[in-house]
Image (cartoon, rainbow, N blue to C red; front, side, top):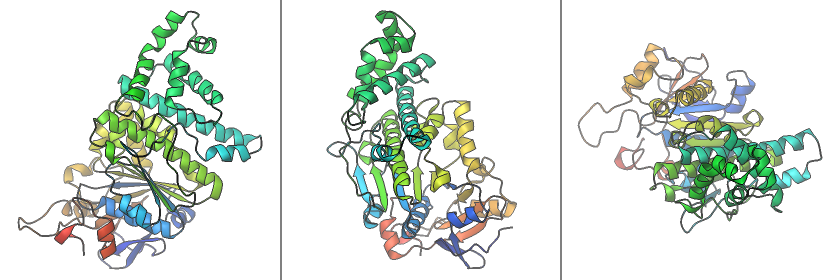
Length: 429
């Protein structure tokens, strides 16, 4: 059966479909009361039933409660109107717009400078370096169509350290790392465990050419120079709008998403270290980046790990678990499935029956029937509302799922509007 009785505290998602009681989602209270063990959320439904509206309702509500919403790679630009309405900052990356340096520690540089020598300072420094190395390895994996070898990783790591130490601003760029790689200095020869320049280039040639493509290829000028974007540190919401790059090939979109994640994660960590505000990290269509090369699931996790145990709630949004099956290796698919299954809060919308066996958590027969009843229109009459619009099943742990009907206000219909959901005469009432 399906349950009811969720607290109304937190963000009001809607009303129980059976009892009509208000249903609220409160990540903080649920964690404190032991209803959930982590703050990861998994949102899954077929296109057109309102996934983005659910995410935006949750983000808006959390901002009202003093949280900050971060959309690190908005590939459709659909969060831009909402973020601006909330008084937040939209950073648009693309031709004629801003540039961001994904290796930029950002405000973490100032945080690091204030920290006295000790364990916390060392942890911050290592966090910066880990994220930078993970990004460079991920970008190489995309261009090489394979994971970088152990030797390539060791050489790249040494080049990153040299570039970082050589930059007076502590903000190395990808061209800076490439320049160090291209110069077979003694430290670089030592890292490669060779004594001759020719042997060095035999080992690093492919990786160097891959960086050449990143710097001089389709992404030229967007992620290969110093950050030009600015923002108010107290902004309630931040979005990196990369929709101008969405018409490019998948490899370009993937690289742009990875760069945006890395920069966004650094920004989030600096805010956490500074003001202690809770943050909602909205990650939509992550599979588009992770399918571009082997090993990107692990590197993406290393890159975006931002201390969720310290007040970070991550919201992963997808259409189908089949999206994860498109990842290049069995290991990647298993790790991605693990991220889904470990999420403490699951929100499901309308889906076909064929999807249910692959869900990250089991559903009861009644819950399954509800979800499939929402997945398709029951009539050929035009203009009828899709049966799944605004309907969702909220699941946490072993609790019975809560069937929720979400109704949008007129202002929400305007701000949450997408091409396929909650639009025109078919908008949820």
